[in-house]
Image (cartoon, rainbow, N blue to C red):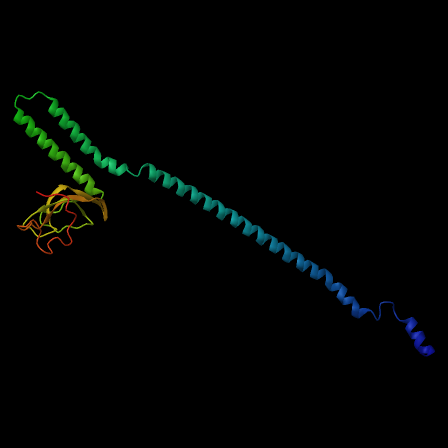
Length: 213
């Protein structure tokens, strides 16, 4: 470097030549401020999400408690309507007993009143049961035996077709489509031939021969 160049370099202002690097230092505070704002926004969003979670959790707990309370109430009062329907039956029985306990000179009149009261009570009970889907299984004589609805108590020799119902000993009942109790019936079986044997093939498919008449 010549003497002239050295002199010019020494005379240059102190900040000259460092202007290019000075810009990077000025940008740093701006970046920090932007990050701070983003952090605050993220923190507010996190607080909002947390509050929403707490509200949703509280609502779910309230729903669970209401459901438990409803189930408990339903279990406790499940038969309420059915019991209400049976109360007139009880009233009818009590009135019948009161009438029977009164003095009657004519026994025939008393019997007529008892029969009339019993028929009314039975009608009320049937209506109460039907209201809740309880229906009778009472096959007519001559109806084919159905093992899904009937139970054979005995078989009896008859001129009727084999495996047909001759007599209903006890009615059955259904609750909607579910069988509560099968009808207890007497079922026909072919008459035995002279040698004491049933006709060939006559007993096929019959219920168990548990009796006869």
